[in-house]
Image (cartoon, rainbow, N blue to C red; front, side, top):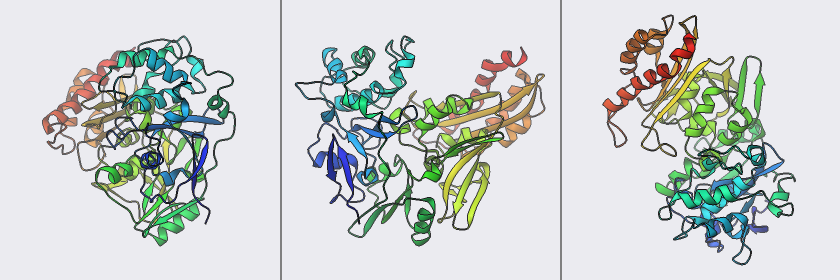
Length: 478
């Protein structure tokens, strides 16, 4: 067995004797890298963020920011991590650290290392220079996208000086070692087996090997970005006897563009999908910015979001509206299941224990009128109370095709079939909309809970359709 190792700030370190559930954050702090902090332990505050070298969308390698509190260190066997300590020293500050210091962006300092790492990831983004000069409320004149910090919380300084620091950083110097690193090949994924006290973390090299493991261990927990399982480990103290990581399987990381459909690999991160699709699927372009935070999207996957079966997962309503299907790989081959038939109950689906979600297939062409409405207590980085996605085609003022996906109003994500029937073949008009609104408000079985009342959820369903019409009605008839 090859010893599992990780490179931290340029130094190769053994992962053992870490346990299969030891997070990267725990590992770093045990080795004295105390800049990374635990704030929430569920990926909402960003105090733990670090830089990770990954295969690039633009360059060969990119530095991306991830939540160290969620990722098992075993998942980073053979990978490269840079901490806030590795970016600079008190006598030689990194440009990001220097701007935060001189502009008053740090006070108690607890959250600062996390901000530093998230800012550094944006600082090194290969295509940041392409946005140079396109300044607005959320983008600096230096091309800095403030959404890079959407997963970092500050509780004492205030965000203006942090924003000022972000908008003041220049471009990396030619001799910057981390900037030079992106021109080299990314770290290669390596098969991993880490065992301790009867528990194991395993990363197979191929899809057939993963399916063999699933057949042998039907009780295994399958993980990709660990943004859900990491919370289970940290908050609910759950421990799995056998974990299989599929995030680096080549068969799950393909993006295929065919004349009649797109095929999105289940292990591609949401950030990778967002950048590679580049607006090519308008409804997904509306979804991505509202899906958690950049830190989460840098790790989370479509396969993981659907695999959990959560009724409030953000991806499912949009994919239902797109008419998507899931491709399930199993020991005897692959089968395609319409996403509308995939969920069978609360966190249950038709996927068998010996199957993996290999990809999500979306038919083309896409509806010309689309919308994604996420109703939550915060604008970003929050769990939805209700999510509604629309994909509608209107020709000559008449609704020709319509699909509506709902989340947060039943034990599973679902299609609003009755509302679709009320719209199909009818005029795209205020009168039709009001009839459909009353039907949409009756779809599902919304509950009263701490996020919203059932009455509020129903009202938001109807209001989302009114908002869609108010935004697009004149455009359709023009």
